[in-house]
Amino acid sequence: MNFLVINTDSPKQTEELGQKLGKLLEPADVVCLIGELGAGKTAFTRGLGQGWGTTARVTSPTFTLINEYARPNDGRILFHLDCYRLTNDDDVETIGLEDILAADGAVVIEWPQVASGWLPDDRLSIEIEHVDEETRAFKFSGSGERSKWLVNQVSES
Ligand SMILES: Nc1ncnc2c1ncn2[C@@H]1O[C@H](COP(=O)(O)OP(=O)(O)OP(=O)(O)O)[C@@H](O)[C@H]1O
Ligand SMILES: [Mg+2]
Image 1: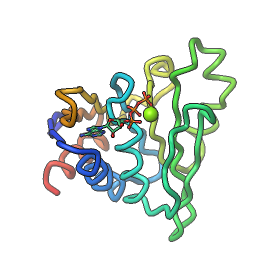
Image 2: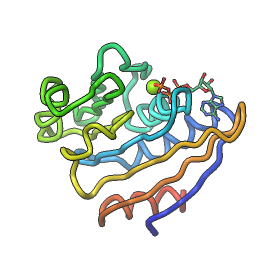
Image 3: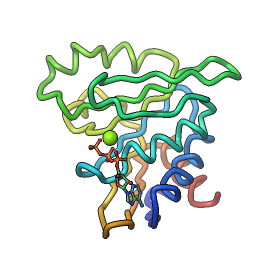
Image 4: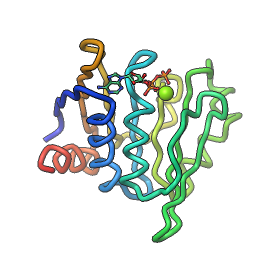
């Protein structure tokens, strides 16, 4: 399966959905979160971090641009990026995206559009649509073998 839509009706449900994906992620996985301001990208990543196994509470990387969360069992890092403020390739280079992608961690990117040329072909994209005040539609799509497998696993869990 390479396409899946799941609606959530509260931030808590969004975190639970993120947690499911976080449990499945492994180093080298790349997840793109696409959606307007307040769509729920950070809320989703908060749950994803829990699933990954970090004990820290995931907060928005709006100002830091990159946050890192190690998981205790093997020390692997979840990188959480926010590219909202980046406008061109020079900006993307400045934050060190290449090094992050080469590091042995999983990567979640909010506002990935500016960085798309740097990202691996096989990546999981999630478009989040604001349906109403409390409802969000999460549209998962995989562009390669690994990301399609992830979509499949989320759909079955
Ligand atoms: N079903 C839902 N899932 C997630 N968030 C929801 C939901 N319903 C309401 N909300 C609210 O929407 C907001 C989502 O904020 P969040 O910071 O996760 O958005 P974001 O997509 O990361 O925005 P930004 O682009 O500014 O970083 C929160 O205020 C949250 O309480
Ligand atoms: Mg955010």
